[in-house]
Structure formats: C-alpha cells, structure tokens
Amino acid sequence: MLESLLVVARQVGILFALMAVGYVCNKRRVLVETGVKGLVEVLVLVVTPCVILQAFQRPFEMRLLEGLGWALGGAALSHALGIASATLFFRGADRRRVAVLRFATTFSNAGFMGIPLEYALLGNDGVFFGAVYVAVFNVLCWSWGLVTMCGSAKEVRTRTLFVNPGTFGIFCGLPFFLFSLHLPEVVAKPVELLADLNTPVAMIVIGYYLAEASFSTVVRCRAAYVAGLLRLVVLPALVLGAVWAASPADGTMAVALVTASCAPVAAMTTMFAARYARDVELSVGLVSGTTLLSIVTMPPVVGFAMWLFGVAASGR
Image 1 (tube, rainbow, N blue to C red):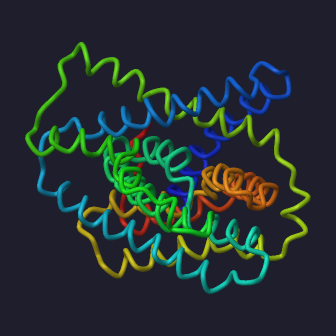
Image 2: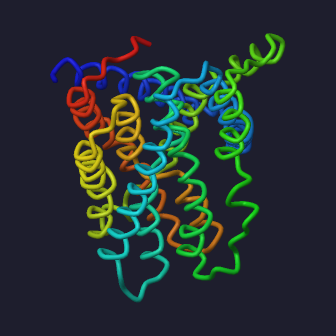
C-alpha cells in the first residue's frame, strides 16, 4: 500500500508543481484575467471533448463496456450521496450561503483535477471511465445544482443537460469504441495534441485562481469545515466502501471512480455563485481551500483504492 500511496503522492505533487506555474504567472502578471478566461473556454469547449474522444479510440472489449455501466451507476451513487449529505447538513435562513455549501459538497472538480490524475495514474483507461463521471456531473450540475443555486427550476434547460462538452465527447466517442473505429491520422493527431493540453493548462488555470483567493471568509465559517470534510474525506470513503462491497470486475474503473469522487470542490461552484448572487467569497474559499488540502487527502484515498483493487500505476 505504501508504494501506491507514494505513486499517487508523486503524481499529485507534479500537478501542484504545474499549479505553482499558474500562481507565479498571476503574481508576475504573465497571465491576466481575460486571458485565463479564454484558456478556460478552450479547456471546456475544445480540450475536454478531445480528451474523451481520444480515450474512446480503442478496440471494443466487453470488459470495458461492462465497466462503463459500473462507472455510470457509481457516478450516480456518488452524486446521490453528495446531495443527501448536503441536504442533511446544511440548512438555515441564509440561502446565499446554504446554496454554496450544498453545491460545493456535492460536486467535485472531476474534470479539471480528476481527469489529469486519472490519466497520469491509469492512462487512457482511467479517462475512459472518468469521462462517465464527468457526464453525470454535467447532467446533475445543470439540473439539481442549478435549482440549488438559483432557487428555481425555470433556469433548467433540457438542451443544456445533454448538450455539453462532457456528454458531447462521450456521444462522439462511444460509436468509435462500440464499432472499433479510428479517426484518420490527419484528425487523430490534432485530437491527441489538443488532449495533451488538458493537464498543464488546467493546472495552470487552477494555480492562477489560487493566487487570487482570499481565505478569510471560509476560515470564519464553521460550516465550511464540514463541507470540506465531506467533500475530501467522508464522501470518497463512502464511495470507496460501496464500490468495494459491489466487487466490480474492473479495478481500474473502481480507482477512476474514487479518484473523481475525492477531487476538491468544483470550480463551477464559484461560477454559479457569481451568476446567481450567492456567497461568492465563500465559494472561492471552498474551491481554493479544498484544492490546497487535496494534496494531503488525495494520495491516501487514491493510494488505498489502488492497493485495495490491485491496480498498478500506468507509469506515466
């Protein structure tokens, strides 16, 4: 188990080293807000679908198809546990704060933080299964999450639920997997090169926003400690226990699921908080604080999962 923990710690350390580049770029004004927002758009609209599409460029295997079904059920369970915990623990008259706490507890940074770590540890197989978690994230984020933040179901759009970068990547990639198809080289190579941007660019963006963070609000909020504990420790432990009890055939799928579930608070928390006039300072503190804490919490959780399911790192 110690070996697994050290492997995960090394990979998490690499991700944080890339975040440090973004932090320095912010402080030295190499990057500015408008440029970073453009990078986020490229990541979400271009790079993420390319990452998923590349992961689905593989010969059909029944093992992998069964794993997708397990991943879908596990991702749904993970978010259901998050919704139940958020509803149970966070109540009160201050809807601006309660909405942020519930959203932050439920949704992890499975895209920007989870997928790079899954790729580093598990290769394309990790992204293959991790993409399903991102798809479930998107559907629930733009339904339950949206209602939680804005306080009304009127904002929910069916088109947004199913037409988004995560689900788009799966819808495009799934036929290639099911029929063992491959993109022509003139398309496949650009897709591969764009997919390779995911880890460095995503980490630089996170590092940039860490440099902007103020922790004063989150430090004074006792409920924020509960939200962070749930997000980083309790919910991943519940997911790990549920997956272990279910005894899935594919250990890589199980580790990918646990990796996505133990990622820090989703960056979408701040975007929604700003859009719907919720507690933006609290949201920034939760995203930044749990991101920093994840360097301590993710290695033991993911390392234990790799040891428990007998999964070796891909060596990337």
